[in-house]
Image (cartoon, rainbow, N blue to C red; front, side, top):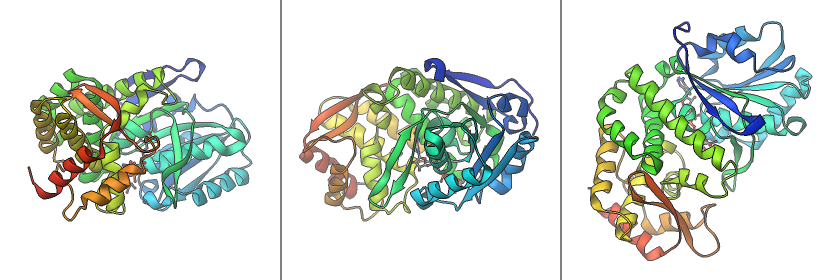
Amino acid sequence: MMNNATPHTIDVALGERSYPVWIGRGLLDDHARWRAMLRGRHALIISNRTVAPLYLERVARGLDGLRWSSFLIDDGEAHKSFANVGLALDALATLGATRDACVIALGGGVVGDLAGFTAACWMRGIDFIQMPTTLLAMVDSSVGGKTGVNLPAGKNLAGAFHQPRAVVADIDTLDSLPEREYRAGIAEIIKGAAIGDAPFFTWLEQHAQALNTRYETALVQAIAAKVRYKAGVVARDETEQGERALLNLGHTFGHALETAGHYTTLLHGEGVAIGMLLAARLSERLGMSGPADTLRLEHLLKAVGLPTTVPAGSDPQQLLALMRLDKKNTAGTLRLILWRRIGQAEIVTGVNEADVLAILQKATTEQR
Ligand SMILES: NC(=O)c1ccc[n+]([C@@H]2O[C@H](COP(=O)([O-])OP(=O)(O)OC[C@H]3O[C@@H](n4cnc5c(N)ncnc54)[C@H](O)[C@@H]3O)[C@@H](O)[C@H]2O)c1
């Protein structure tokens, strides 16, 4: 579809490294807009074998007159690997890319993280543009400059902060996104509201049905609200010295659930959904928050079709052991993101493992 309206524009304010996030229809075809961000004569499109057949041609048409090529990875989290960064760097070398070259990331968070890291590595850092094609990537991974890959030792263990020059979120691409992936992206939208924007949480409760049907006006509003929220946090705390850690609400529980399922049982957004609910229950247990907010979160997650119970057969002791490995912990204590109420998350250190275990045990024995 061709561009038919001025896109929403949100600026990530980082001084001379500030960049726009454009959200709207037909943006991949709006070549004049994003091509203006390319400074040199070389471009490498990084995508995967699912997304490239759908959208690569539309991007390539905008690179007329430049020296460009593409590098495609296989689909899936397992391919967010160092080996593929090496191959992508080889592709830049083959292209003869100079320091003013640009990497274009066309795909979901897997492609975006890998392409951003590749751009951070080539000649110690060149430009890259994010063209997110999943809802999760539009509202979360494409914004904020966290790039990286997985190692055999763990997820996202190698990486760099490297901000893109622009984010081009063409919501046309969501038309082909499978339902389950779409809902996983909604989880990341709910997360933003749960952490720091109570009015937005209420808005989401009121528009859950509209979001389920991908009603455009509501969808664009929701994407823009989450991006605006994240852009503010990133501008205040780019390298996660403080406030940015709040964005990990539900992640410690969620990552443990994802890892226990070997990344095949739950999508990242689904892990975050269940994780947020467990974090809310733990907050309640610790006397930080009341039951009404936990219930509202549970209802909203259910209203948009997200899971709210841990997968059958989950082992509380194994989950706790996995939570101990989280990057956010300092020696010997659990450091978790919990909340006081909807819209007010908090970093809590020294959380008692017995309390966490009690929440996990209850979750594995009780279907609420
Ligand atoms: N950098 C960050 O700040 C950050 C934040 C959150 C998550 N992440 C990372 O993001 C990754 C998850 O991202 P994701 O959920 O986008 O997963 P993904 O990139 O694996 O995409 C999900 C699936 O959708 C397919 N797909 C993508 N766009 C499509 C489209 N328009 N139509 C049809 N199919 C399409 C993909 O091929 C894939 O099968 C994880 O690696 C996670 O660690 C990074």
